[in-house]
Length: 108
Length: 123
Image 1 (cartoon, rainbow over the protein chains, first blue to last red):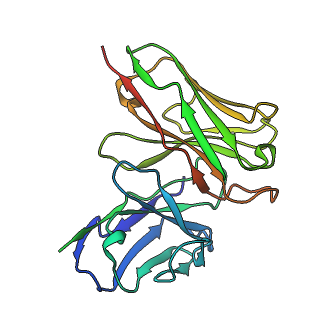
Image 2: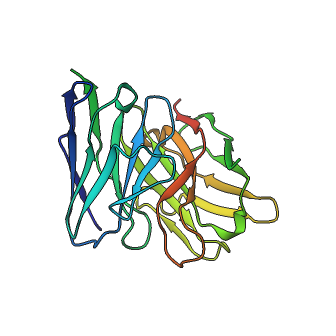
Image 3: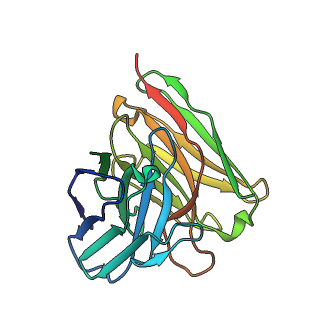
C-alpha cells in the first residue's frame, strides 16, 4: 500500500504569508496526487488534481507541484479564509486511495 | 446543482448494524464511481469503500473488509453502505463523495462531497 507523509503536521502563519506544505509518497506515483482543504465541521473541498491542475472555482493563490514521490501545495498569499486543514491523496492505483495525515494551518 | 445527501447515521451498540444512504442529484450518477470516506472525531480522512459505475467492482479498506458492503442503485441515483458488526473504532462522520472524472476507467479522487452523517458506536 502507498503511504503518504505530510509535513508539517501544523503551522502558524500570518495573513499575506506564503505557505508551503509537502507530501511525500512511499513509492513513485507520477502526478497522481490530489490536494483537499477542510474547514471545521465541513466536508473536504478538492483544490488541486493531478498534482498541479487547479480545480474549477479555486483561487489562483493555490498551486501544486511535484511528481514521483515529492509534492508541494503552495498558498502564495494566505487569506483569512485559507485557515484550514489540508490533505493530500494519492490516486495512483486501485482504491482505497490513501490520504495523508493532514496539515493544519493556524493563525499566528 | 450537484448535490449529495447522506442519511442513516445514528447511535448503535457494538456489534450492531446500520445502513447509510446517499442520494445524488444534479449529475448523471451512473457515469461516476462513488466513494465513502470517514473521519473519526479529531482525526484525518480515511477512504472506506469505492464502487465503480456499474457496481460490479467494489473496494474496501482493510479496517472494514468483511463487515461493510457498498452498493448502488443507478435507477434511484443512490449509493449505500451496509455496515455490520460495528465497533467503537467505526465511530466517525461518514461522507459520500463523487469521483472526479467520468468514464476514464480510473479512480480520480473526490470532487463533490455530501455534508456527512455521524455514526456513533457505543453501549
